[in-house]
Image (cartoon, rainbow, N blue to C red; front, side, top):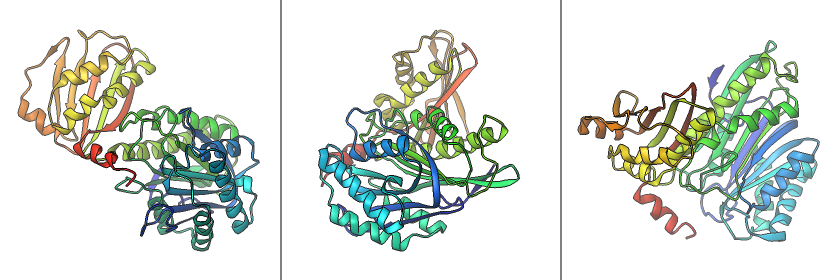
Length: 407
């Protein structure tokens, strides 16, 4: 596997664009298009929130029942959630507008929205935005970057990644982009994520690979404990690499899963590190747990804890906060037979061992927690399972950003 430049346009046959449509924001890109020159098999995972945005309802139907998908139209600024039948009608009109411009069926168009909940969409602006997107779409790296920028809300950076690998003597490419900075505590995937590949792969295996992988990637991140109404992660596969179709769980399928895991892990960590107001990526890795599920529960509990997140922001090596979060995770363990380390890219410091806080140097601990990427490593000494979760610190700016989000 080779890490390459780009995102959704890295794979053969994919085009993208990002334009200003003034849906809510002024003087910035707020609509994006991803388009495949050929029909794609598609798979998706969506929010577990009972309150689902209209685009989620539309996309679930497309993924489940349409013969194929070929385009994604996304907007930022307004979430089209809690908008009733009018919101769903907007999804339908958006898909029809894209279908007319691209000469494809309306049920081959996925739609996605992110932004303020409860506002109705300006359908005329959406329709005009679709026309501009189709006119400007291109297969360049720059076009992919522009699309990634157009779906940002409170994000401070655009998020994209791409890799290539060999399948049956053919070079296969997988790329993606996502947005997410606040309202991130998904139980499926990310807030908005779009993946593209030129691999030939069956729909059944594509869906299985995606559903399986989000468990240890996007489901292992948290910014603020809020699961969005709009969480959507979809993947399009157009087969233009012309590799032998991946239709069984063989070595080629394993290569595809490895690439998918890299892309999803990279994008998930970018979201966690770009949490609203964040100054640090906060990682917790649990090793030697009894079961994989225990390791997941333990690691997610620590990075989701407001007190743990505040300790990282304050560079305060109060390991009791991490231990407390482990203790209410729901996983059973022996606190008298485990170790906790604070780490960054250069140092590792044992702060808790077998029931007792160690006599660690406070200054060194503070230095470790002052790094832009901080890790809490927990050795449960109980088995062979491990898991990693990612979050961010909790800062004053998180409250400021969300206190006036609608203004």
